[in-house]
Length: 233
Image (cartoon, rainbow, N blue to C red; front, side, top):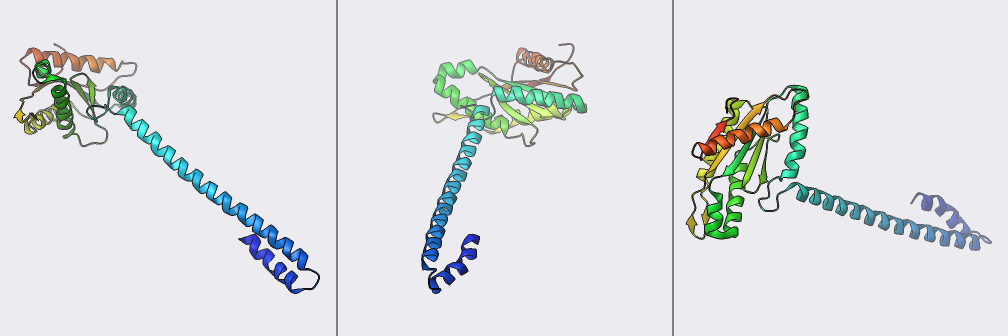
């Protein structure tokens, strides 16, 4: 555009002045050629920009898929491992208490045996939604931990707050009835809860082991309950 404005007076003068017509024609051809290249380059740039946007969207979609459990659509174990380690290091530096809830579906094998794997899958999808519903802070996550186990990771929560969250999850499961093949299937869960403020050089596995121990005690005590880890377990 700027080049056209600069050359326009010269071309007009050339067309109006005797003896300069060939030069003016050459300048016009040159200007048309340059304009064509500019238009083509602009289209190519626009297309490359559109392709880059499409690729970025595809990368974000793939990243989301790699973090999400294919069945339940909540976070998967791989994302949990990554997020847990990052949170652990952050909590260690800033002396923040973190909590882990490990949730196991009671008598899940009987659901699979009675209603088949499709019924079992539907049950897990239903539970994932019910477990995730009470979680409303950006720093807290619910994940499918593996099989019929789920986990909830809480940042800045003491034992009382963590127990309150576990109770809210159990209440959410009770309120959201699992209906399958036009019938209600009663579902309960057992929850093991552990909280601590990570110390330097302390392994993150310690929190997982404590929550596992509390879960084992909850199931041994009759299931359908949430219990806090105790050093005496």
